[in-house]
Amino acid sequence: MKTICGTDKLVVSDEPKIGWILILLGLTGSLCLFLASSTDPDSIKGIFATLLFAAAGVVFLQKSLFEFEAKSRYCHWRKTWLMKKTNGKIFFDDIEDLVLESNDESYRLVLKCKEMTLPMTDSFYTDKEKLEATRKQILDFVKIKASNNLIDTLTSQVRLLVENGKEIEAIKLVRDTSKCSLAEARQHVVGLRSSNFISDNTRIIEDSRHHDR
Image (tube, rainbow, N blue to C red; front, side, top):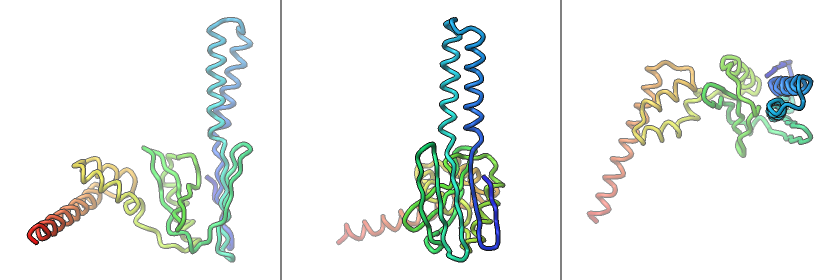
């Protein structure tokens, strides 16, 4: 992901190189196997496998471009994959937050808007610190107050784990997807557990009052 920031314009673009790398390796492997022995059954299977390897690279060829305009206060975005193109416009006032979405140990930036959720890339990246820096740069440019990183956006997932008695998994989820210590993650989970306990007791009391009536 590449970022170019000016006084009135911030441009964030993404063109994953892994797609071209997979295609190049796949085609090169197929050519080498074909030249070595094109009639050998094992070579034919190898050629087929390397061609599939190259075809897999096509999936990663999507390009994305987000242009944030300070004067007009809107973001014009465009995504391109082979012959398919999608684009749109988002006003700064409609942007509620920009969060990091996790997939195991990989991350990507996702715009949270009033009427939609828009991933800035289809690919996930392992360089979390770089994505955090890009996130902060965009939020500062758009002048939106950042939420408490991923903790706010993951509350529903964490709460579900807590309700199912999986507090260790809940703590790990908070730690893996946000920059916080073990103590802070545990405190967040304990807080959710306490709120669940209070709400459950309140519901029990209300049910008992309704039964008494």
